[in-house]
Length: 199
Image (cartoon, rainbow, N blue to C red; front, top):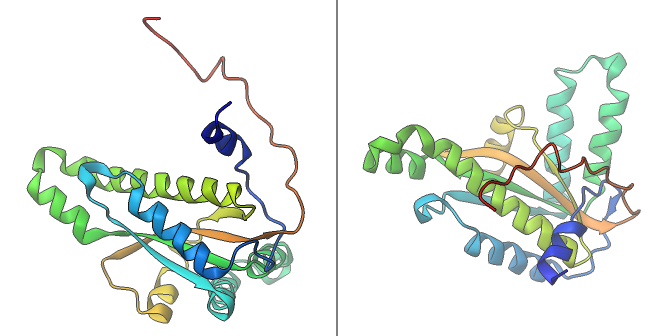
C-alpha cells in the first residue's frame, strides 16, 4: 500500500480532542493553505473560502453554536448537545468552509448550459478540500471531525467575523491533539457498493 492509500485508510473522525497540537499553529495554517491551493474545483473556479479559528476565537464559535442550539433544543433534552459542543470547544481550532456565491453566479452566467450544475460542483470542490485537509491532518497526528451546524449559525458567524454576504457557510472541521483513539470503524462490504464493467 502506498503512502496516499495508507493516509486515506488512516483518516478517521476523532472526537476526543485537546489543545496539545503536534505542530505549531503557523505550520497548521501552512498545511491548510497548501490544501486550499491544490484542491481541485470545476473549471478551476477555486470558489472555496476558509476561516481558521484558534484559541479564544475557536471557543467563541462553539459558544455561539451552543447559544443557537439552546434556542431550538428543549432545555430538558439539552445535556447531550451541551456535552457534544463542549467536546468541540475543547479542541485546538476549527476551519470553517464557505463557498463564494459570486464565483458560482459568474460561472452560471458564462456557461448557461451548465448553470444548474455549478452549485453542486462547488459543494463537491469544497468536500474534496475538506477531505484533503482532513487526511493531511491525519498524517500529521492531528485529529479532526467534520460538522455541519450551518445554516443555524450562519448569521452569528457572519456578524462575529465580518464574513462577506457572498460567502455561504458549508461545514466546520474541528481539529486538535488526539486525546483518545477513535473506536474501530465499521466498513460495509464493497460487493453491494461497487460495480465494474468492461474488465
